[in-house]
Image (cartoon, rainbow, N blue to C red):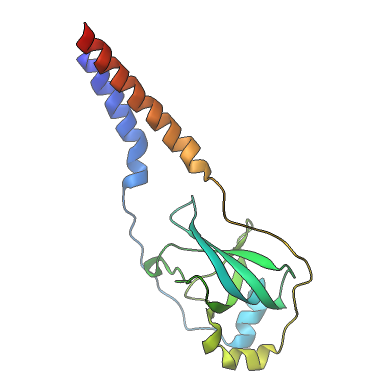
Length: 178
């Protein structure tokens, strides 16, 4: 019996180990592109206010909900979700809720991403870029892309983990009664 409990604990531990091991990455950017080069290489260039920031379920990324005020390139939606790495060591851009940004984003195939290697910056620091980009356009499609959703990782990791703990507790309680 003790052996089966040990095996069960080892299985649970080995299933969860990858989610608790730290990853190390270093960020290195090439020389920044000019405004024109960045505009051409970006799929989306917008100005807007950060409304929400939420930890994404994948690789420590952050999802940033932006209320779009001006569009210089790309979709003309009133909101966009921009994904960035979790910290600057991984080239993640450090957005802050309530601040306005000029965002240059790439199309990852599943959404838009930006990093500190792009020209993304606070709107208050973007005067030179705005001289070249012009006034932009107003969004013409109203959307609600709220980040208030339950991450799937909870269902894939949390529920089996809780069931495993429940089985172990049940086993020990049953054994103590015998």
